[in-house]
Length: 268
Length: 286
Image (cartoon, rainbow over all chains, first blue to last red; front, side, top):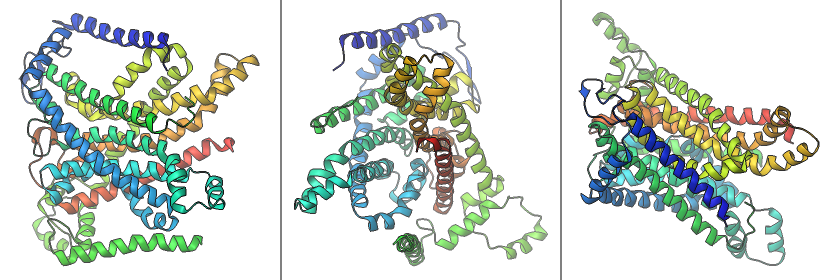
């Protein structure tokens, strides 16, 4: 439980950022150049630091015109699909390789290979294999998520002290029971840590993957479009929206994790 | 036992390579699954600098090494792009990101972990900033700083810094805290406290985060190069202009596979270096 003092201080910290940005934007208003050379031509009417007022107006427009809401829905659906697919595959493989030494040896060269491959580099390959459509985006997210969840689950299984397993075995527990009652609960925090990293990766991936056969509505294309015109308030709102979604996913995961590991003694 | 598992490891690698070679050879669709010799030839073409030789020598040259060609390989060879140059550029970007991002992240981590007050005020701000994916704000940086190296480097620095904060924060707050109390009660303060107690105590965890930072730096560098860059591995893979061109054309899978293998090897090598560095710097822990 957070103490009241901490909540108040966190609120002050956030408020200070909001105020400082407002002041900076007001000072910048009319002072920063509004005409920018874009490599090939000048663009006029750029607000490099839009005021809160223009951000609010733009936000209201984006919400009223349904652009933002539908973009969030489409991108979130893709991330969720990839996250679900990737973490199910990754966790199952991680549990398996964590349990069976021989399987680990067989899988190791391939896990190592994918572990050091930046998932984004696979994007053009997935386009060739799975087309420009939905499938390549979801599979790309799933690949980047699968690697980290696999590693999380694997290390979780390996972190179980052998004493526990020996004790359970000597008391007559079947391997299956030991897996359910000892290995799985022990690995759970590691599995969650893997998924949390995966969420971050998934949103990094979608921002780029949505430039493939780019269509509205999607947050990745909204970001690209607002950069192409360029229209800074839209860009900043899209950025903040992606950030808020990452944060929301993370908070939900944390809540699920603390529910799932209620029985554990918490240190921090 | 040890020998047997090494044998198993190698045979797993060989088995899948053989399986790939057979499947790709039987499929005969180089536009989907290039055969193993084709991938090796692509490596060859990409490693040789593409100075188109005079017409007379062309014939001779052609006989000497069989090179695979496709539109993408031809374009890359014509532009004088080689795999080693692209890798060098990307590695330089990754290293820059690590050299600038790590100290920055460690500094923030130490500040938040050291001072309870700073943590209370700033942790929520940090979490907000951390949540923004680094590749999302490339265009915003471009508006501020123009089309330059900055909008490729800043996302990498940011990604590294943000990931380095967490392990440092926990190390300073949880691990080093105990030693700090002891050292303080013995009268240590100021610089002595930082250099002799805090940093050594926190270093194992901080260095543990280094490996993850390396992986993130590569991911971000390749992504930034795919979006907007005239060189580097990301550029080699897709032409480097995804943000403006939206990538409508298919690439040559042989080039992508060659690039992915190179990236995986580079990432592995840098990770091995990071592990060696960690082992060397934390010798005293055991």
